[in-house]
Image (tube, rainbow, N blue to C red):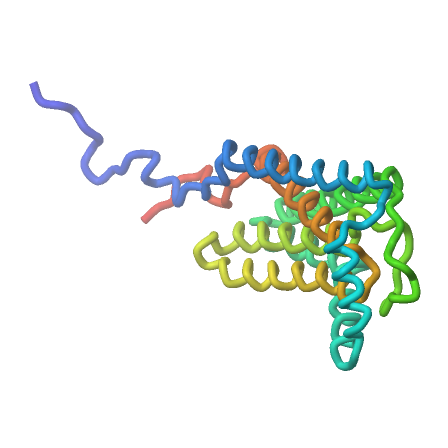
Amino acid sequence: MTASGPPPGSEPHAARRGPAPRPGPGTRPLLAVAAVCAALFTAVAVTVSVRHGVPLGPEQAAIHWSAAHHGEPLRSIARVLTATGTGTVPYLLAVLAGLLAGRDARGRLRAVGCAVLVLAAGQAIRYGLMELLARPRPPALDWAGPASGYAFPSGHATTSALAAGILAWGIARRVGPARARTWWAVLAVWAAGVGLTRVYLAVHWPGDVVGGWLLAATLLCLALLLEPLAVPRTRPGNAHPTNS
């Protein structure tokens, strides 16, 4: 007997479905990174709490150095850069991420909503922790820029890192990780720069900035774990055969 196959000229159904959706990041690596970042954040937060906000020696040294180097044009550059880490800019980046991630009008609307929700939730969590720990900022006499509220974790560091991660996600959904690496590097440099300006302007202790980065990394990993439920990785035309 001979094996039967598809009629001549026909193609298997799977072969005519078009390109498969890009696979998302693995669950185990994301869980591992989230766990490590959460553990490190907890360690920093506990240190701040048990010391009642009193800075460590290296933190004090960093602020003393910053206060002694507030010359121009570095101070003006730092003020401009730090301003991009709060207000409307991070939300505009989240909206852009959603527009890039969506494949049609409905998908873009859903992706934009999810991106903005992640950013807003991260800011709410950060604000709650800030009020709970109530860490004082460095002495106001050393400030070289505006600041308000308690210090830990840094709002600018948390928000800019979240916005950078969200936009990196949107770019990866549009062009794929291999082509997105340059943009990822640019976004990482921007977020790191915003965080560092908070120490340079002497409005945050270094631990506040590190805590903000760790909190943002934890939340981004958790958001990626929920991504398949919130923003399915399907493309228009995948559900219908194409003729060739």
